[in-house]
Amino acid sequence: MDDIDSLTYRIIGCAMEVYKQLGPGLLENIYEQALRHELQLNDIPVESQVEVNVNYKGRNITDNLRLDLLVDNRVIVELKSVEELKPVHHKQLLTYLRLMDKKIGLLINFNTDNLMDGIKRVIN
Image (cartoon, rainbow, N blue to C red; front, side, top):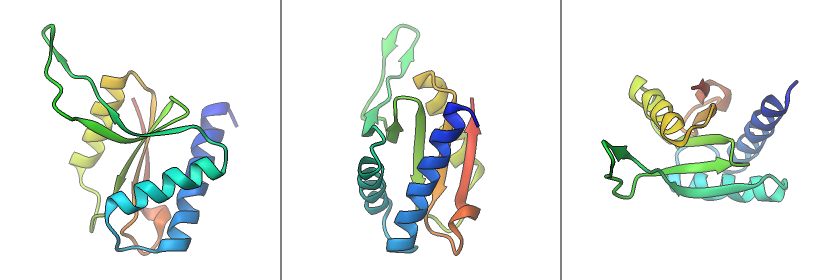
């Protein structure tokens, strides 16, 4: 298992612990705070609400565009608490990966009966 696979495995493990403790049905920001704390408890570097810069033809047009979590400056984690993940959620994460020049992202939907069904790995 290479380094990035190991990191995503650890992130998923932390998400599973949050899900085990809190269960489904809460707001996204609760899961974000809990997952950030769980990652920190596991000595995994994490930043939350990281600003995404959007440059359009030489002009910065960012207006509070933020991604949920950036883990170890390598993996973008986008959290949801929705009935089902839609293609637009996947596209949103792909756009964040492109704009931030990152290779791997995790899309995690906490509003599921089985968290593993709500986790998607996205590669840029």
